[in-house]
Every structure is written in structure tokens, then in C-alpha cells.
Length: 463
Image (cartoon, rainbow, N blue to C red; front, side, top):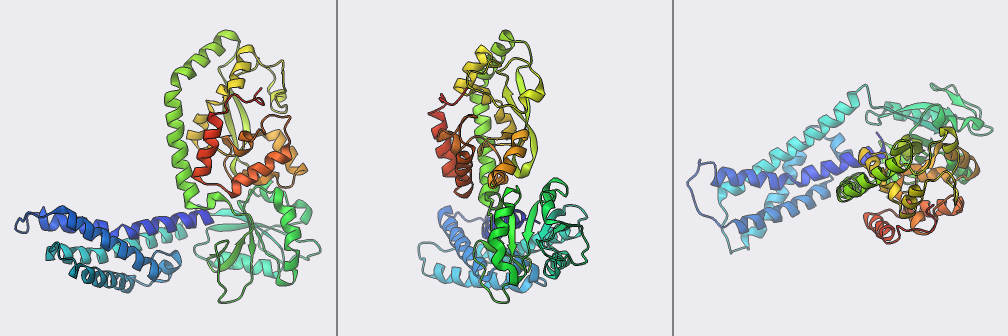
């Protein structure tokens, strides 16, 4: 289970528990006033809504204070009854104490009693629902993702053993990489030489790299971190901190193993996983709907002015070095795909058609990429996707280049709106802007980039 998965489960657990009072008192209101089991009475709805909101706020505070919404607490509970009763009791006493001083309304006793009882029942159900989900993930034979451990001594073996022994760490140690001058221990997975580091991704397809430096070699961490920069997977540093050490935001407890995020990724956050995806889908649907007449017109012009298909499909590289087929309106004459896959478009390129030159100038050739966004291959905003040929080239020449693949590539990006567009711009400068975007991502930042793109779509570097 990746850190992103942990954060997502944590998020939905919190949402589920925080929603308990609203669900409980909604059912209580139906039972008291709509079910027909009790005599009818005409009541004002507003005070009951205020009471429900008050209980919800108190409940959220109590649940967070008790740590009931944390996976670490959830996994250590035996039955959950005691914790659910304790949370319900605290919330009930506080809510009734505050309601005692609220003289503007008198609440139906059945409503209050049934609501408080249902808070216990619903919280108990939520606790066991998530415990069942975690247990199902534990028992599942599928879903384990491969990881690599940088280190091949007894310390690295101990890390691997603890991961294997953990019932919730849904990973499989695919390989070890021996450090320079480090004799390899007898391990249960293949041990690569230091020179074979790239095989961690290229051959074993690992999704994460754990750097397991023994305490006496921790001073070499900076050296090794510089070397692994070109890998396009998250990198974590295993820390042997001892007992009782506070774990701040970038150090997180991965089921008993303290890990330091040396390359934090936006995809690890719930805000990125949910907010950005929802934004991408809604924005793309809106753009495609509004530009549908333009799409048809452009397709017709391409078909009438040159021989060949309307769309041009080309392999590009996105998140975690994953290949995908990017769509664009065809702006060139038909040619050998081998040439187009290893050659950037140049200024005054003779391969570009007359209508294609106009489409590139207005960036209309990029519009079909919104279908890639809907398909999940791209995002609206992110580093521009590069040809596979150049990715393999740049990863060897520029150590930090592959870091840009920690997020999905985008139709527009921070580098593009700052003038770094086209093959004659500096790759190293583009990388700096891409890395800035990666570490400063927010929905507001995405909105700013889209705004700058819309008001600068006729770009001098578009050719």
C-alpha cells in the first residue's frame, strides 16, 4: 500500500466518522416526526438543524482528539465498542450541556435519545467497515506492488523482513541494490550491483525506492540521493530513529518503519488525488463541449487541405515513466513515424502544412489532448509530455530530469506560460520550472496557469 493509498483510506475514514451525527439525527428525525410511530407534532426545523450541526462539530473534535479517525488507532482496536461508547458519551454530555442553555427551542426527547444511540451504532459500523476493508486488502492475493531497497546488508534485510511481516504494507521487495563497497548478505530477492541501478525501474518495474543506509553510513545520504535523482519513482529514506521520536509531516510511520520523504510528491496527498482529478474531468468536459463546433471545423479543414488522418497519435511519457498515446490534430504532411518520434519540430519546419502552421500558432492542435485528460493519461496542467526518445536521452544528461514525471504531464504548464516552449528553449530551465510546479502545486496555482494560458494562447514559441 503506497502512501497515497494510506492517505486516501485515512481521508474516507475521517469523512465517514465525521458524517455519523448527520446520518444519525436524520434517521432520528424521520423516526420521531415522519414514521407514524409517535404522535404528530408541528415543529420548527431550524433549531433541529442547528442542534445537528453543533453535535457534528463536537463529534468531529472528539473523534480527532481520541484519534478514532486514524488508521493506527483503528488497527489496534479489539472490538471498537469501548471507543465508540466513549466518543458517543463525551459528545452527548457536551451537546446536552450546551442545549440546556439554549432556551429558544425544546427538542423532542425521542429525537435526542434515538440520535445519540444511532451515533454509537453508526460509528461502530464505520469502524468495522474500514477494519473489514483493511482486512480484505491484507488477505487479497493481488495488489502488491514491487519496491526496491537501496542497500544489501543486514540492515536492509531487516527492513525487508519488517515489510514482509507487516500485514498492511501491501508491497513486495522485488530487488536490492548493493551500495558501493558493500558486501551483499544472503537475501531472498535479486541483488543488483551499483551500476545496475536503472534496472530497478527498467527491469523490475519498481514503484518506490527505499534507501536503507545503516546508521554508520547515514552521512553518505546526500551522495546517494544525488545519484538516484534520475529515477522517476518516489524515493524514501529509512530512518533508524529509536523509540519515541516525533514524526513530522515529511517523516511518516509506514506501519512501524519511520520513512523520510526525500522526494515528496503531490500525488501522495488527498487534495491532489481527488481535487485535481475532479477539476481535470469537469474542465475538460466543459472545454470539449464549448469547442465542439471548432473541433468539427478544424477536422474538416485538415481533411480538405492534406492527405491523411485528422488526428496524429504519438507515444509520450507521463506519470512514473508510463507510456501513453497522445492525440493532436495533424499539422504535418504524412511522413515516416520513426522520424517524427525522434525529431522535434523546428521553426519554419517544411513538414508543417499551411493550415497546420495556423493551428500551431493558435494552439488549436492541442485540443484533442483533452480526451487524453478524460482518459486519465494527462492532466490539464503539468509538465509537457516529452517524446520517449528524448526522455531516454535527457534522463542520462540531466540528473533531475525524471523528477518531473512524479506528476502527470499536462496540456499546459508553468514552464510554458513563462515562455519556455519549443525545442529551441533551454531544457535545464524548463526542468527548474517543472520542479517548482511539482513542489508548489495547488488548485489555485493550476487556475493561475490556465488563466495565463488563455490570455497568451498566441505564443511566439508556438510553431
